[in-house]
Image 1 (cartoon, one colour):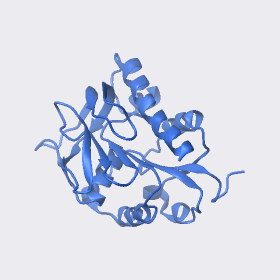
Image 2 (cartoon, helix red, strand yellow):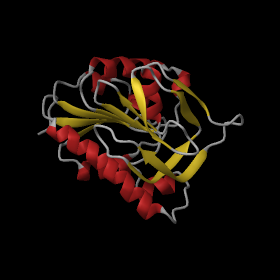
Image 3 (cartoon, helix red, strand yellow):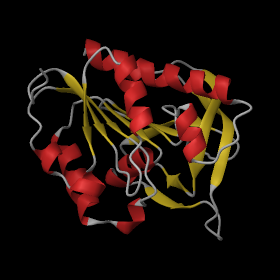
Length: 219
């Protein structure tokens, strides 16, 4: 039975409308460790604040919420994440922007008309403690992007469209990606993304998430 002190990975879904249950289920099947699931925007921080000492990793998923809103649940989530300093963390899309904002970076809209960029794009990685130097196709859907790197972090992934596709903390085990490496076919359907390239994009993304889950199980 999973308890607060059992070794596990904490999955934080900041959804404000529809939880990404399909993505969570895919993570659960792929993870060497059990997962817990939390919805702070919809149901508050109580479940996270009752977490014990068993967290071996933390994943912050995407959201249609914006870090620029600075909502109460976002403030409390930021405090909670800072209190877990040293636990491996992965920020995805909103999570990427949230960690950047939390550590002093700047997030802004990509276009003056606030339109969304959705589909697939090739992302180039430089070598980090988590991922090797590589490039591959990833799923994307976002209006905002990190436009200034936090002082405590460094850029580890980029693309022609987005200069700061990925970040790594210089001293803490925190990594982030603007794209959605956790995306599933159901995610693509929910986001209305046509999927002719989905097999390559999804498999490359799952590999990156798998590396993080493996890291959590070994550290």
